[in-house]
Image (cartoon, one colour):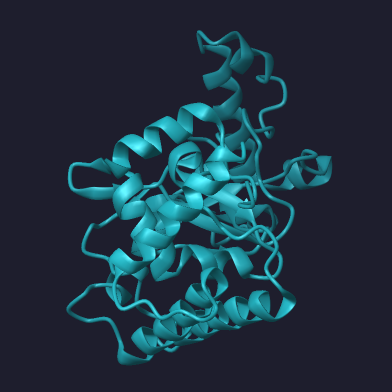
Length: 287
């Protein structure tokens, strides 16, 4: 598939020792703060909530650990939780409490993709994140150095696809790596002009969001309160994404977009571009 690989974020298995809530932030400990990174899952991404994690993949400097009671207590909590765990893999990490049970953190800028969003959204609320923002295992991630993927996932074309192909959690829209992302029939070799138009459109969306720094994505994409500048930016992005699929066509509705997407999907599926289980499931959703 033309879509880049998607992964889950990282999993600490820490007994609560590595994750730092706002009320626990060590304001008076500059050494501990040096090891803290923003920690983002689906809820934090959409609702603008803050959490942090202790992030030291290679371990702390011994002198730092000796001078920070906060770090000592937190790592000791992890050690004790892992020693008492029934999972032998967790037990094996007890002597390295700073290590994460599963470390899938991208080392480049990436797109954070919520596992689900409200069905009232006009666009799927993804975000571009720097590699020093740690993604939790409740968030999907995909490397995106230039912003092209952010533009694609933020487009009406992708939203039309996920509304039909994606699952539901109650009424909310659910993202899926295998059924939604990997099967999205993105043209495999866009021109540099097409890529740049999508990247620029995505940057326009980010600039429009930045005009409202105190508003969460949930606030900004509330259908009753989406700022006009953000709507205009998304509409510009949609034109660029639509042109990627059909340069000389205009789409008057999502039904037009879906007709083209399903046509492209069938062609790529017949050519072996998609794995068979996903193809069958998509065809069932297509009816």
